[in-house]
Length: 235
Image 1 (tube, helix red, strand yellow):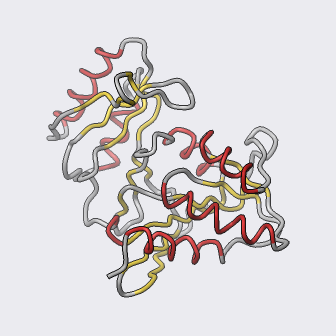
Image 2 (image 1 turned 120 degrees about the vertical axis):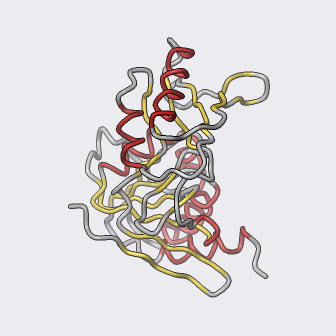
């Protein structure tokens, strides 16, 4: 039986084969994305010419260390393709992302891209989103008020469960943008679009980890091989 790392590597290898010369490439964050960066670096060293926009400081540092050329989204504001991982993916290619803490930048980069390709091991595929706690990036000001508003928004949609401030050691976890993350264990989310709208209506919420209608395709690696899923074009 293949390990999770081996499956992630298979997905990353299949994804890097789709990168074409001259692409403006959004580069994701997380364990699968890191494997992708290393595979991408091998192609770059062999002559592939791309320019990457990293979704986190961590990914930016890895790209630099491996010789993958990068730019900012300010200098390259329109991208051909973003390749990123996911914490959960359903049959409609809706996602939960943000386990690695980069959800805001990941969503900005994905939205600036013509296509978004998700790479993951097959265990990330679910029938309904929500088993993985939903990351919600929030402003530090008014944290308790925002927490209560999130809880009430969930309750109005029949959702309940623990909402926990993410920590790094003893201190609250800070995103690259200087925000906090609340992880909401809502369980199964029957209407992700309604929850997305309810969370966006809360002033203290900066962004959330529901990626709806953004992924155009996915590569999932499992024991039976590598499967590709495609969604209707969003543009």
